Image (cartoon, rainbow, N blue to C red; front, side, top):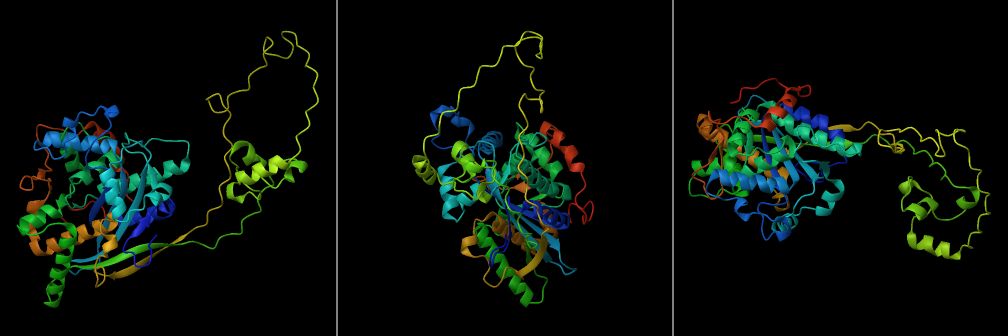
Length: 475
């Protein structure tokens, strides 16, 4: 969850149920929230002709914003998020710039069939993203809830997807500022993954964002370039520059950012002794075999790793080759043919058993779930301002740490710019068009989308206890 020296809480399918309530309480106390995402593609390149893509509709750096949005929406609808970093900056005490900071790294695994761009995959792997761990521990979710997520036969998948979506909707419910860094694609992917199907036009998308984030959307890349033109504006550079600036302010006795990082650590309760596994449903003679007959016949066993007998197929085959051939069963006399009307449903065919689940098939026997013990969540303070060394190289491009650096840069800019920061509200950086940001402003000629109107009633649900209530968007 929070490894040695980690500066964020790792959230996976294994612990999201235990951590969700604590995460939601932190979001409810936010002063502002910073986000960052990692995904499986930015563009469509050299796609197989079987897809019949019209490449003119996939130019994600098109000059015309309508064309650019359509291309970005196409990418987000056909690709998937693999991780989401969410960093909550909450007021620590009355000192200006003082925050308690919780950073969460959500490892995600979309259940929708989706595309993977080789370049994006290589980028993730080169920056330490564990694709194997994502496959086995990623939080399973269905993108494009409309307005509710897809439900499947596996309760765990439904629970994971519902929780991660509620956590995102809590960010919307706080009405606090949302902070991104070069975040247009992040916004598009987050909307498609956890809010609903993307609107058809960028005008409706912008109108929806206005309603979703009344506290404003701030893009640190855009703000930094406007505040200090001509200097580097990539995230790691801005973060380290901001740390130096704040250190000098602190040494001079001026108000400075003080960010106390915290992580959640799950302390499991002592495990109860496991009950002995029930005996396999086998006859006395069969039970003497050293391998599991259920697995030998069907390739699976309801006891799984608790089964006392071998599931090794090579061993099973060795045993079966040494076993004597089974004796043929004695022939049974054919049953007498009944006359019509004698104990049957008006004819020779026996009466069908009633349907148990409305689908004509008997319900599955659910395997008993192991008793879960209550776990204790402990919050640890890691360091002041991320420690003297700042971000470790291995953590760059981790969604959670990128979200933390984005939030720290924003906190620094708030102190430096003061009221002038409001001039950058609801302006999002556009790659290749830095002087022409996307303006997140409602237009009298456009309305919110069908998706927003369908999902808006879900936003009326109250956040968990600890919420400070409706916030001043400028707070």
